Image (cartoon, rainbow, N blue to C red; front, side, top):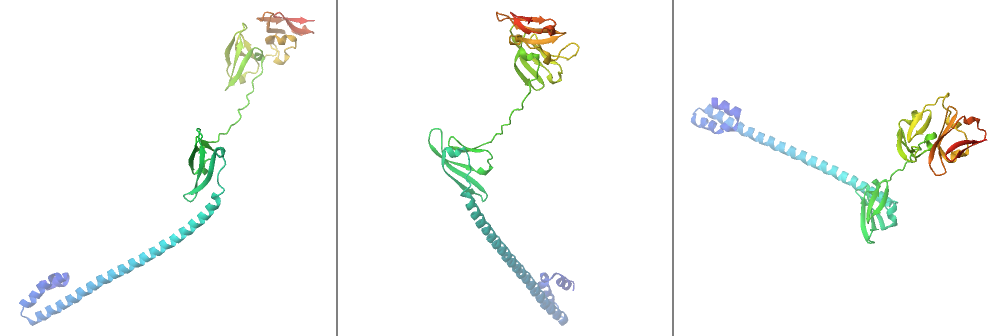
Length: 297
């Protein structure tokens, strides 16, 4: 009976043992029971086989339905892409005939035309002349990305970046008596530079730092720039420098304590430091007489 139970639980693996049990046992009941069990076993095996066959059929049907659905989807996408391709071709064909860009290359290139590349990109084709006078076939890919000038560079199409020229800011050269004896005046950042006369006819390089902070007269003292702080009681403003013919041959003119000082050139071309005391008392022309300031009454 133990083998019968194993047979019922595990199935056909014990069929041969069960048949041996029926042959060896002379009991009719046992033999009938064995035949019944063998018959039920055959039915069970047949049912299992049919169940497996049905699963395979169902799987095959599902696979067929999936493949059919996938094929229909691919077909629909193909039609959609073909329609888009046709529309894009017609649109690009209309644009490509008039899309040849402007540029300096047109002066030395011929056979200029545009061809589409990858739906939305365009290539520019032309035959351009090089420095030797030969004509070379050239191509410039995706020319629409060029935001400058398309030029002919020795027979090859190139994009030259367009440089924006901004006008240099106007720098105001500060006023001051130094301008009468200095030259090559420049502004470098916050500094004033110039080449100034040292009183002996030599011009040397000099610099005044932070010239904007100077609220007085910028002067030249023996070839060096300096800021003369404006003091009402000692210094007259630059605009109070008196008129006179001396200005044509004198430089480094300044006023202090009511006296007029300047470096004036004599008849031999040499410069001399000269001073005119109490210049306000002169009601005539202040002139230069052989390197010396004088008042013509």
